[in-house]
Amino acid sequence: MSEKSDLPQGTLDLLILKTVALGPVHGYAIAQRLQQVSCDVLQVPQGSLYPALHRLENRGFLAADWQESETGREAKFYRLTKKGRAQLETEAASWERLAQAVGLILRMSEGE
Amino acid sequence: MSEKSDLPQGTLDLLILKTVALGPVHGYAIAQRLQQVSCDVLQVPQGSLYPALHRLENRGFLAADWQESETGREAKFYRLTKKGRAQLETEAASWERLAQAVGLILRMSEGE
DNA sequence: ACTAATATGCAGAAGCTCGAGGTATGCGAA
DNA sequence: TTCGCATACCTCGAGCTTCTGCATATTAGT
Image (cartoon, rainbow over all chains, first blue to last red):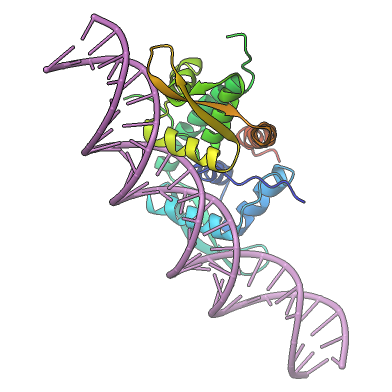
């Protein structure tokens, strides 16, 4: 049985922002990218991905336009806005702090 | 403005399980403990804490009984069940994988 | 009396997941 | 060649879980 972890709320936004930050991509490619780079640890179902993209677009973190993809099909390419770049930094910092705190707790023993 | 990060969904369970694993405690103390150990990064409001505790108890990961706390008041002391200990290990491993994957992505650059 | 410690419950919002539906392109088979 | 299926790509809606805030209650210590 595959050990796929559900994404904790909020984490997906961060991952998407980061992926888009590397260059314009369409939604479908984002999911593949994440799955590939994470060695299959992160699996993003479409039902999670697209709502997240629309959310981020509504909030002004992403902008999108239709272009032709590598395969000839029309696809919605997303890119980061200025606001999105700021948001990415905020969320990345937030994640770092959180990860560090949780790490601390997990390694905590009866000592303290 | 305080930089407190909301806990991503699911993370709270893990933190609670870990805290309880170190010895029986009551709910109120768990929140304090987490806040203190994490240098105020993690703040657990009561509205998040108690539902989580009940959840974990219903699922058989925690067991509870009333005892007198240090201050003389009655308090519900939680301890880990066998099932809870297994769950803790599962979730801890899950977190490690997730944290590593996200870390990877955050450090990803145009190179790949 | 007032505050701190400790617990419960509910209402609301946000996010994740599933599943169903829709279009276009390309490829293999009849 | 033409049918059909697979793949790439997007949208929407319902349902569930979880987080959070706020209100409420009890007992202990000052």
